[in-house]
Structure formats: C-alpha cells, structure tokens
Image (tube, rainbow, N blue to C red; front, side):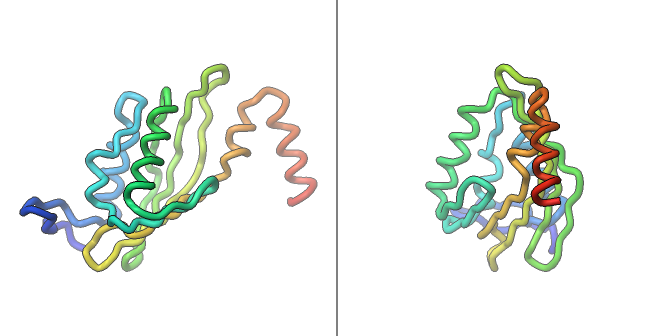
Length: 157
C-alpha cells in the first residue's frame, strides 16, 4: 500500500492506511492525557465496520462510536503503546500494550493485538481485537493473581 492521499467525501483527503500510518494514528488515539480520542481516526472506518473483541461484537458506525464513547467515559487513565505492526495485503496486524488505571488498584497492562481489514476504498471494514482481559487484570490483584494463574495452568496448561 502507498501513502498517497485518498479522496474522502466533499473533496477532503487522508493518508492511505498501511502498517506505519496505523501505528501513528493509534498512538494518537490513546495517548491524549489519559482519555482516548478517536476523532482523527473515525474517518478511516467504513460505515459498515464490523468490530469484535473479547467482550462484544458490533456492526455499523453508530454502534462503533457508541462503544468508543463508553470507553472514553469510563477511562480515567488509558494509554496504548504500539509494539509492532505488520501488513499482508489488506490485513494490518498491530501488537499493543494498553495501560489502564483503576480507582483502587494499581495500573494494569493488557497485552493484545488487533487485526484490521481494509476494503477496496482503503477504509477499515473489520477490526478484531485479541487479548486476555481477565488474566492481565487479575495479575495485579494481590493474592488473587497468583491463584488465578495456578488455576489456569492446572486446568488448561
């Protein structure tokens, strides 16, 4: 993929998405003083976006925007470090570390990855996030984290 501007509605343009531009855009999204801000990246999503993660699956821009608003509203301090990006054809893979600050507990780091798929117009038509929500959070709860890991290893390891 190239980085030439792509025509958007009403004569505006944006940089074509690729592994490098995704890394730059996602870094801006989550590193805005603890509150995520999707305003600069939403134009890169198709109106028929399909999003899936460990918690939910949703379709369409309205549902996607509602999900991003919920995350913003309940986040006191949320940051994301992009570790790696790679691209194969229209699929871009992002490895990330997300740091979440909870009210009574220390910060927790979630380790995960995302796959975004581009459509013919170069917009994100699908996003699939992969992460171990409970394990990464439980690791930071005193005494409980070790017990959880022992249980998981005994049952599934």
